[in-house]
Image (cartoon, rainbow, N blue to C red; front, side, top):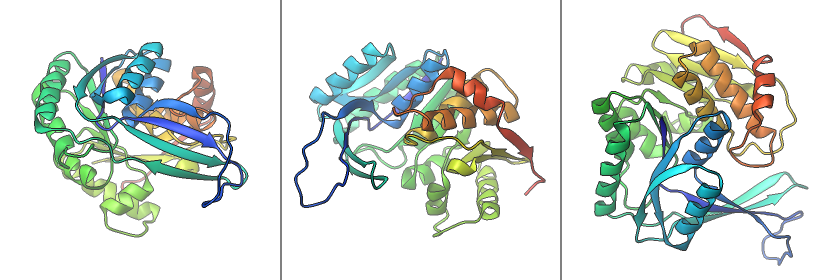
Length: 312
């Protein structure tokens, strides 16, 4: 069983507004509404791959009730902690004419210490049955930056791996918890290294350094340039085919799902990287967020090249 952790989920609402201008009114068609959050995106892709993930985290208020209803419709198992605060709403304005996306993201509710302690009990119970934990996304207000670090430390006691996909201070602290794998993109890795930009060689060196701190693997997503997977004595690079991208949002989450799926199946690391890239690319070809077509994933698997580089 794979458990996905989403500590700051959201109701995501997207509107298509061509020629969007600030300071002007726009009449729009009804927007699309989704149960959002990186861990929930991961769960959807895992479900498409035939897995039965369990979603957990914090939900509250009417927005939280709506997400629970949506998860039921999607047949996703869940064990969320009910909090006093209202689950956040995030708004995206998509302008297809200019190719831009403007986002308004609420910070999220304040999660009390008591609610965090209740979550700890639930997660530790889930860990007794889980084969893997995937912790993704930002932290809600009130949750310390060290919370992912704590989750990783609990997982060591339970002897199960954690795949961590977050950024900023949560990533920096999370690395101290020695997760099995982290999945930064280039921007997140640059921020972690406190650099404005990094070359591929510099990113590989940074990933190698992270692996000396107890992280087993670093999966770095590079968008249309593919990805690479680094371990203490490993450097694999993936070249992906050119596709007609429709919506790349959620591709990183889909990569995590593909990697988790393949690791759970005990595939080789080369195959794991292929699955990660195939799922990430397949998501970019779909209108929805955190969604794939399994037959497209299979087609892409045959077009992805994995190159084993010399040790960095």
